[in-house]
Image 1 (spheres, protein in one colour):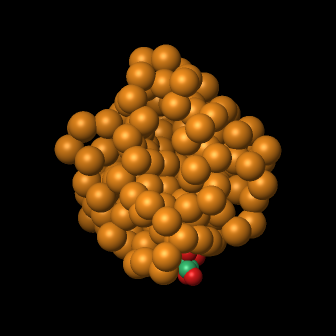
Image 2 (cartoon, rainbow, N blue to C red; image 1 turned 60 degrees about the vertical axis):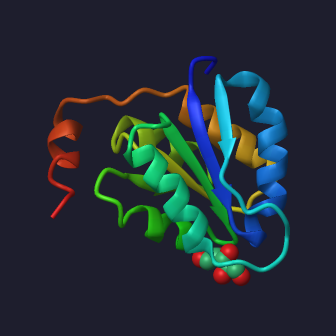
Amino acid sequence: MKNLQIAIGSDHAGFELKSLVKEWLDPQVEVLKDLGTNSEESVDYPDFAHAVAGEVEKGNYDLGILICGTGIGVDMTANKHQGIRSALCWNKEISKLAKTHNNANIISLPGRFITFEEAKEILDTFFNTNFEGGRHSRRINKISC
Ligand code: RB5
């Protein structure tokens, strides 16, 4: 994971898990850029999801991590970006498939429904799994409309 450049963002509901994830992940990657929010004060999740998705879409970061209460709002928002394939992951089996089959470039996490231990497993799997290509390349090329 040492050469990865990652952007991370959350709303207030994901702030606590994001803080724990940052502390754990920062020493393991080349760059971990936090695009907010910076407290548990109520904010609007699209503001932070667009910030992370925009940076990943432009190629400024390899991958993104987004966290809100359910993971749904940030996931929906990120997937409005043409260059983004965001996957809502709540266990490591799903995060493995999000990479092998979907080549997701953003992982969305449900901060109010998973523990930090679960988040570490999910992220470890996501960052250490490769896209399988082949028939899955054909399928992801059909996603955009
Ligand atoms: C915030 O209360 C909550 O709606 C948000 O974090 C997220 O779950 C939305 O999808």
